[in-house]
Amino acid sequence: MRTLVALPLFLTMTASVAAQNELGGAQDSLILWKKVDEICRLGDDADLETQQACQKRADLQVRLQRFGWCRGKLGETEEQYRWHHCRWNSVRFITPP
Image 1: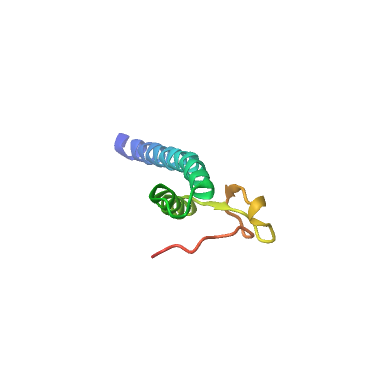
Image 2: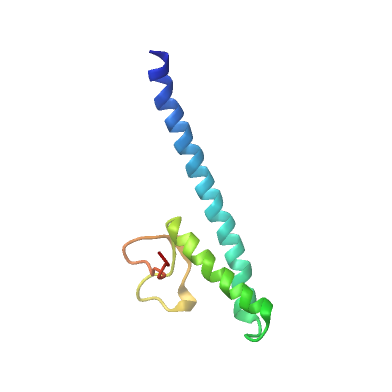
C-alpha cells in the first residue's frame, strides 16, 4: 500500500524537477540569446565570430520555441518583438525536424 501512495508523490516530484529544469534551460537560453543577438546585430558580417554568433542565435531560437517561448506577435515590427510564452498570435520560427 505504501508503494501505491508514494508513486504519485514521486511522479509529481519528478514532473516538478523536470519543469524546473526546463524553466532553467529556457532562462539560460534567453540570457545567452541576448548576448549573441547583440554580437550578431552589431558585428561585421564577414567576421567569423559574428557568423558563429548568428548561428548560435538561430539555434537558441529553435530551442526556446521548443520550450514554449516565442519572439514577437503577429502585426508587430521586428523592433517590437519581445520574448514571451507562445500564444495563438505569436510569431513562430521554422524549426528543423
